Image (cartoon, rainbow, N blue to C red; front, side):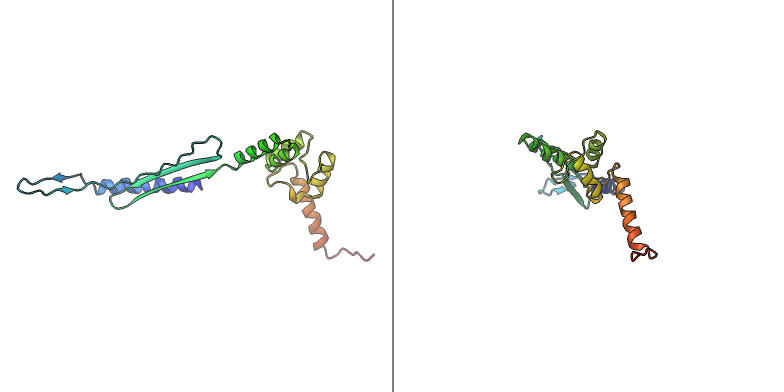
Length: 176
């Protein structure tokens, strides 16, 4: 999203630079002494909106830009939410309320934390289960593993292969 926005702003800026050099006009103000005739050719101005994020406890970043040519002016601004920042703040709040397992579960929604917990020998909680019970539950339910996990990928792939073999094999005879 941000790359598309920056690319669009850059494109508009380049077009405005080239069109302004080809159509360069000067500001002219003229006054006639016998009467008052004023000709004003000041170019219009596009101002980028100021997006202020004053609070340091907000998980948002703000970007704005504006471009002006002799014909058209465009200004825009966006805010982008940092999901990882929100996850950390939620986990910190849960931990502060004494909900330690819930705090860890919140962090475990990130595949990197999920893998780190497995590597440390303390798997993420699974629906109230902790320790070896949680490990067994994760192995039995590989589809619940956060997307991007490298530790549980092989188990998830094995489970899918077993399902495919049992449903797609026409030569398997279960009557015997």
